[in-house]
Length: 450
Image (cartoon, rainbow, N blue to C red; front, side, top):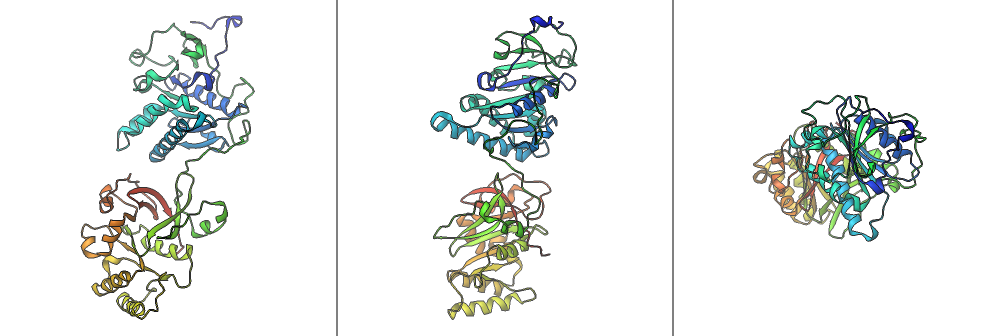
């Protein structure tokens, strides 16, 4: 169907507050991807502020990464971070629905290439992430959260497809097999960007439309780069990727700008690295007089953790550890003698590296010093015999406090009874922090020592 005469053309306007979610269905040559880019571009330039969270499998909006209104832009290679974004958005959804008035800046969740995302989710242990998208679509409209998706057959056959109030189908480049699940539509010319709209954006009837190309002058858009678009009055909450390297100096500079951990009378707090969606400083919280176990293989950064603890938490009499070159058996024997003589401060924290290979005498003396009320931090390799070799680890297991460095299998969390997502090719210092039976990813600060 040819485009009607100009005087008969009606503008096709998508108002996220009034129209809610929208799906753009079509192949690479249809113009659906460009339509998504244009929609994001127009929203970024609109005076009414909204914040973006983009799962961009198709590479449709790379420039959005630097925009002030963007809280996260995730590619297909960051699958676990993409799930973190969806989890954080669902948390925001619950907060808004449970709060008075569901107030908050409108959020727009942009998912390009839905077929690629759903295939990636279903190919591993993250298949449940598809339910997070369904929750956002089902309840997001009441909380000011709008979902914009692009895709092909997988989008039309998705479980939530019937809940999408607005859909634009772009038939150019498609075949009969691709369109088998499409609704009946009027015929259209085979032009890029030519589509058929359904839903409130088209007045409730099927309407043939021609979508502008992204970047084309349409409503005065200034683009979507860092300098383009309308100003941002409030900062969006962010979901950042963990850095591959963070130094001790990075954590020590400007601590007043970070969320430092609080204090608890019965806990020992020790700064160690960064973690969380917005890369806040993370501390180890160990029961006073308890044991914190750090498990990791070769080149995972176990020894560095102990160096970082001392540098990030300086104290003249806090740390007790054998210096390089010292005989560990002799050191812990002398430390036990100091403790029995009352010359070891109660605040002292015992550091034992590679506890699983210490001589039996050294382990016995270390355990006896710990039994006198001193907190201990021990590192060891993963092993099914670890509890028999280092009984101190049993106490860390009982309190549910520890860290797994660069784990290669979920079985390595069995000691603490937790499950987590294994990160392939994790950098040294990447850890799973375990506290109160829950796990979270962190990056331990690099102390600059080999």
